[in-house]
Amino acid sequence: MDRYAVLGQPVAHSLSPRIHAQFARQAGAEISYQAIEVAPANLAERLAELHAQGYRGLNLTVPHKAAGAAACVSAGAAALRAGAVNTLVRLEQGWHGENTDGPGLVQDLAGNLGVALAGRRILVLGAGGAARGIVEPLLRQAPAELVVAGRNPWKAEELAAAFKTLGPIRPCTFLALKGDRFDIVLNATSAGHRGEAPRLPAGLLAAGALAYDLNYGRAAAPFLEWAQAQGAQQRSDGLGMLVEQAAEAFALWRGLRPSTAPVLQALRSDAAG
Ligand code: ATR
Image 1 (cartoon, rainbow, N blue to C red):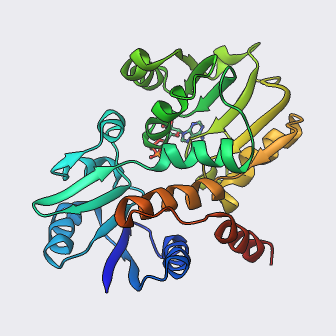
Image 2 (image 1 turned 135 degrees about the horizontal axis):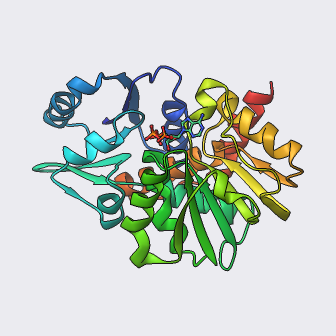
């Protein structure tokens, strides 16, 4: 049986084992997929162990995406630029790293939610690891402008500088956003994990704008409540992105992209129940 796992800390509540079990059922494949708790200090050692044990592929989640990139023997171009990997593919000599978070987000926005990205004004809130993983795939969709806003101005500046050859990206502080309007606002901060929303000026949402949180469940609630109070006509958490990034990972491992709609629907109806 082919073995896979997701490594994180904490990882007990990860939905990835469920998602991949459903993908495997669809594909008629017998796989095992575990959630393994790993402390940052033990990551490199665990990665080597799991490779030696014959694991076919791994997912990395918080807080391992950047350190995981450093432990790979090779990586895709987008993962290298992001400096973060969420999917490891077995090679004979070690792990190959990819980042499927950005492609998963684009697929959720454009495919599942039917939101066009080309020519739109996009705002990314936050300039940490989550933001780094999504900037390149977003720029490849040819937005009119992509503004990265961070609480720490220098982090947003550094991020925008790293990607400026790929398209119209501009750093900004939260305060200086005042007066600007966006068609799509993506929350890539970790504020929701502490029950907070980023402190933003009012009036950022253009008519018909989409407000999207990369987190899902309770962590997405504060930002989506802010968006509702600001009159956002479309709001979504990141559950669709989670399922889509998993489908991209499954495709890298097994050469077949599963159908995501039934899996997303099952997760949503569980959450509602
Ligand atoms: P992740 O890997 O989830 O992106 P991270 O690299 O720690 O985690 O980045 C989290 C981002 O959310 C950072 O940009 C952080 O801002 P700082 O760099 O100023 O810490 C941002 N963030 C966290 N809490 C926030 C809050 N309450 N308001 C605004 N931004 C916040």
